[in-house]
Image 1 (cartoon, rainbow, N blue to C red):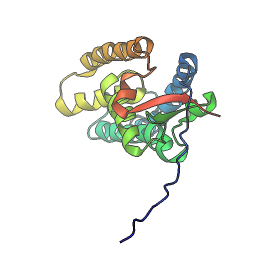
Image 2: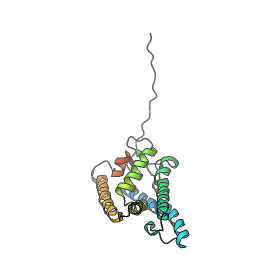
Image 3: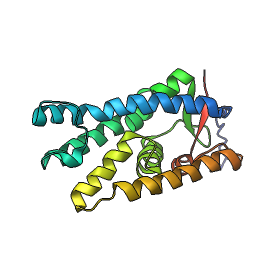
Image 4: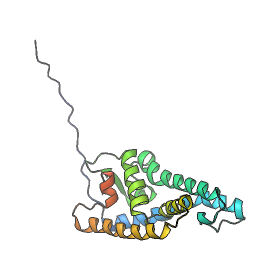
Length: 192
């Protein structure tokens, strides 16, 4: 019996440079604005139908079940922008990250998957940190509508504290990763 030798392809490891804080912040500002617009679309349409104006964006004040419907649709629009776009359309990038020439990758420098993006963006940014994007306020309002208990204020304050901790992790831990990066097993890097 002979021994079979199989030559393995040598995989080229890509090395990335961590994205500087300024680029991450500018990207965040762009994404905050674009994400808020995406999130507002279904709420504005339902508000227009209910009240003949798009000015009322508070789904808690909508006649039910329209507040719940508007909230769920708004969160789905946010998931499209913050999860689906970087998972499938522009790998690792939202519009803000694309403009700033940075992207999200796994810690091992591989492309992110839908699982990474759900953990990072939905669980980490929107739910746990909970104040960084408009979608966070929408889920706070949804919880309030469903439970008939005001969760907006306590969740907002908890989100500020957790977001502060997340920023401190970035600044002082040395890996330049935030809490949502740890949850998603990701990092943000420079790209061409």
